[in-house]
Amino acid sequence: MVTIAVIAREALDRIVAETAADPEREACGLLLGTDDAILEARPCANVADDPATRFEINPVALLAAHRAARAGDARVIGCYHSHPNGYAAPSPRDAADAAPDSGLWLIAAGSVVTAWRAVPDGAVHGRFDPVTLRCVTGEAITGVRHKDIS
Ligand SMILES: [Zn+2]
Image (cartoon, rainbow, N blue to C red; front, side, top):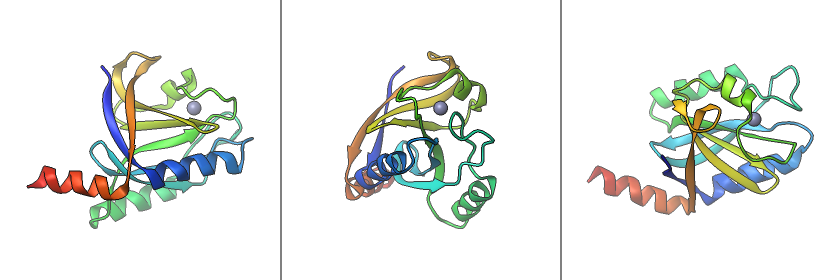
């Protein structure tokens, strides 16, 4: 099943910029927002042993983001990382590393960013279903949120 997520233009630009900044390593970070709306992409240190082929978000940054969410900040709704090999789709290793409830996964290669949702029985490698990503302004996302609440 293909679902839709929206992302703020600023967040998408950030991911593409981080990907370009060090094309030999997998850039990675957290997606913050609400439900299927990504308001912010927050770069984190990749602490994997081999960052050229793998990513592991700095657990300190992850804990800090969860703690901030409990205090009222935007929730952690997923993660992003880049693929230096230029292939913007989940790898079998991503599937093995992804918890089935880990939310949205954005994968960047060059200026291409694809979106996926980690699920127990996904169409791709048994772990991911494709998500259509719509880029909007941050103000548009705030408008969506207000509409949902009222
Ligand atoms: Zn990957």
